[in-house]
Image (cartoon, rainbow, N blue to C red; front, side, top):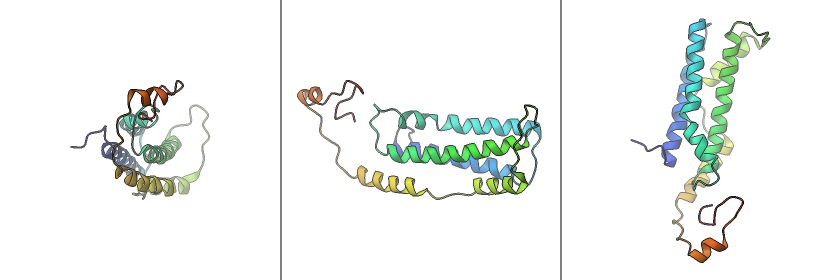
Length: 165
């Protein structure tokens, strides 16, 4: 069992979200879904966003002491790009009741779905951040600050001292 408040747990949640996106893309390939299937797929897309919400909140919290924040932010960005592409593709299958005139064609839709259904290696930025995170995890944990050190390094804007940053 992986704790979701650890770096490994957060990466696991991101991997689970990416796997859900691949499953959605595989279900859509080569066919046009019905209205009820579209609604279910939209719910699943929303479910992916709620699945990674704890990671998003923690990675964007400036007061959270977190090793690998840049890795999580780059992975979240990649996941959100894939999720938005799938959402846009789902919009092509919906009826044009609100005047939506999307038109990338079936070849474009198939290309997006084929890309979204594949397991993609980490992007260049995420790979670089992963290597930095591995090196940072090898560093010893810093000592506690003295009360003087806490007072002298306190930043009133962020509400943090040097130990918390």
